[in-house]
Length: 261
Image (tube, helix red, strand yellow):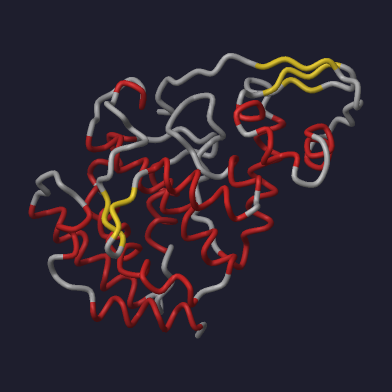
């Protein structure tokens, strides 16, 4: 059993019954609380595999194309909140785990919190119809109230892994697709590469040829992240099926903020 597994099991048995109250400000139905308690027992049986339940929820409610069944997900909202509660309990001891475990932790946290935000406001046609969606501090991790902006810009982007932009998903059509599996430290590199290649190969988001590319605005907004070890073209050529010329003409696709359902 890994150190992280032992740590998770320890946290499960020390998790206070009021833990969910720290995670959500909205009233939670009794059935949802029961679901979260069920989750703790489930996680214990899995020998402390932190992301097991989130993986099962994603497989159940997210299609291979990344479409999210929010109506179905809402029926399992309590289990999602239980997963978020466990993440919040682990937060004070993140310095004790590896870089890969931290990356998987924060990528899954971002996606879980985004789903929670949508479920709190569902039905909605777009995440942008929610007031200040990326700035709402709804989730308490340790002593800190987190929001999505801080997780993306102050944590994940500082970990020098540009492929995170294809792993974290803002619940919108033009975002990279939400993977229907949780990220794990042991599979992280392969999962990030897969997500990046799939995004570049999606012709609704990127159109690539040798001399002309029309790419997602993600590459404009986070240009510096993709130029850490060369040019943007160098980055694209690592993961594209097409070899792009350094002198290729470049333009950007419109961004569709419609809900990814």
